[in-house]
Length: 495
Image 1 (cartoon, rainbow, N blue to C red):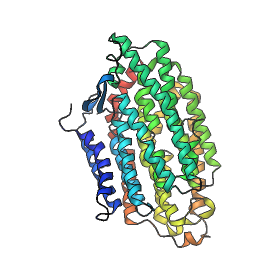
Image 2: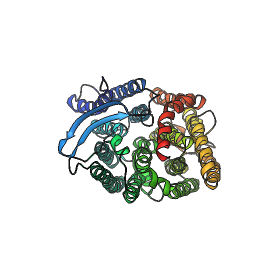
Image 3: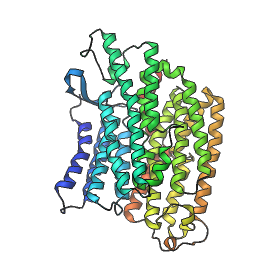
Image 4: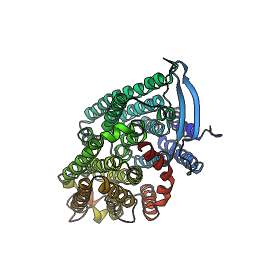
């Protein structure tokens, strides 16, 4: 148990901020209260990181209390080397989204910012929960605010349909997750001999130590993989992502592309809880990774809208993460975790820049842009920098992550490694081509001709993101050394 309940305080600061927005109407602007709450969240997440012992492989900052006694379900929080860095990364992205929504959260700004805070609290709970039922609660709760964010503040004519489709698909994906966690709990009861319900256990650390029959393990892996693949998304379960990218509020969509909760779930739960089944089905992970990698890159080439291009680019990068996991090596899992952290800054940052651009011009379609670099050179510069970081340019945080995955994949699946190299070429092609058409050439639209460049608030957000990307690109050991013990323990379970 930790002396200070840092994780509980981190999870509570967001709903508390949402409550204050409604309890103090007219006294302080909702956007200011939301910014303060997000700032406190960043500070608490950094405090949790500062109190983390990087030499240990077990869960730290533990908090535990009884929740449902009859089923042995607990309110249990903790972090290890794999999850601890996602706390400040997530808090920082939500702060950036809040600042990016400063003047665009209309109508009903109080409702918008309170929903955004509730979304942040639920998302951080996903990374901090160590009881599978508590994790499932946060997983499902994260769907509710996003439904309303897309329905009421989406930018497309079919935003209601997009919100409903996304929510129903995610709820459907939660069904196999729940069944998988129940099989694990029942298996523990059978193994312990304590019977039901007293022998049930939903504690992650306990379940990791509980042996499982081969047929049950295969069922658990397939159920968890399916549930997490829907959210990631893994090809061919990705059809909700381009639709949501086009219809949803651009700043809020940064949360979906920047935070790959499904990929985190694969690393946190699916593979460690069913290691033999995961290795037996390595071809499934690697095959879907290669297909998603190439399909996303090729489809991105055909897009004429920046948001659609970024959505398919995100799908391509998800394939890269799957290949890192499927390598089942220290280098592969380190690269996968670092690439997921990189998504938060790079993919999230790209959608924030796109949100700034749409707020000024009214569109992110290439036909409505052209020559944007003439009137918005700073914005265009950040778009280029973040795009190059997404391509894995050396000296950016994307390079060590992609290089580790490439090295691990070439060793485990040489053909898939060659596919990664080809996809990198395609990645440069689709981004640079759309960037050239959107930001260079003559100015032909009045909206572009009269657009203003980044405001100080927007510039501060992007400067912070860019600084972190450069620091981690120059000194990747800041991340790799911290996650290495936990990644080594992850690989040891497979052996």
